[in-house]
Image (cartoon, rainbow, N blue to C red; front, side):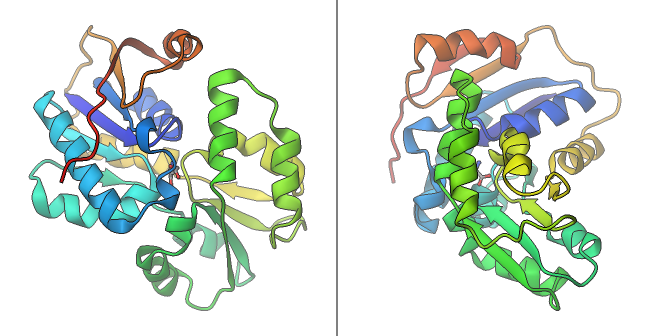
Length: 260
Ligand code: DGL
């Protein structure tokens, strides 16, 4: 089985790690760093770009694609399912579990600007949390900080604290915060430190791994090829060095811009 992942940056790795721990397969991770951040692009742009990246991954032999990005899923997963016959697994903010856990009280969704403004998120809230007050915070700056932390081991705690200090998220214990961007689990510790240690952070890595394992035949065995990392923009030498630690032993750049 050959499984593809798509995200604008490192965020999808937070999902890849969960899936890889559960499902034995050959993985190809496509990082569209040429166009990071997706959270500031239009729906049309994201649909066309995700179409192009999916077609490329399918050419590489990928048989199932995880759209490891809430922004791309909310803007494009329906479009992709209409145009391709392979299965797509999308990642969307955990609204249903948040509604259950917050027991009628307000909860927050920390995501990208595009996800916060999406019809898709509006629909999820209407369906699963119609009675709740949902506080939405869109931040591309947090996406950039997660990139810095993962690639360069930067200490970003002060910047995360500064961003959250001016956000409307209540700092009280027990408040539920949905991490509605796959980059944000990498900032888990910084977010908790900035809010209250007892804030409940929800991400979707484990749920996505369960879904992929349901879809993949149980007798599949991983091959010995190792995993492949593709970027759409050249990586710095220090980033290439990090790839082995992140689980990849092959890397190439596919610098194709969006063509429509
Ligand atoms: N990781 C992506 C998500 O889950 C978005 C990051 C970006 O804005 O590019 O929404």
